Amino acid sequence: MAARTYNVERWSPEEDQQLRSMSESGKSLTLISARLKKPMKAIVARASSLHIAIAGTGIGQRSRR
Image 1: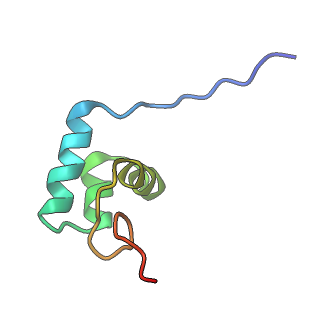
Image 2 (image 1 turned 180 degrees about the vertical axis):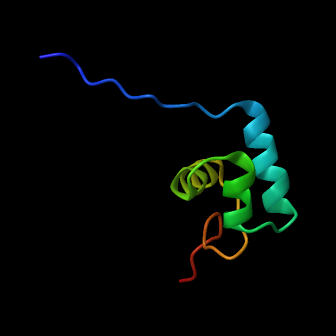
C-alpha cells in the first residue's frame, strides 16, 4: 500500500510578518484569511503557535482565572 501524501504549503517568513502586522492593526480574521489566501483554521493555528492576538477572537490572549 502506498503512503498517503499531503500537499501542505508551509508559511513563509513574509506571510508570518504580514499576519503580525495585520493583527497589530486590528484586522479581522476574515480579512486576514482573504489577504493571505489561506483557510481561517490555518490562520488560527498559525496565530496561536506564534502567540499573535487576532481581533474578535480569543487567540493570543491570556485566560481569566
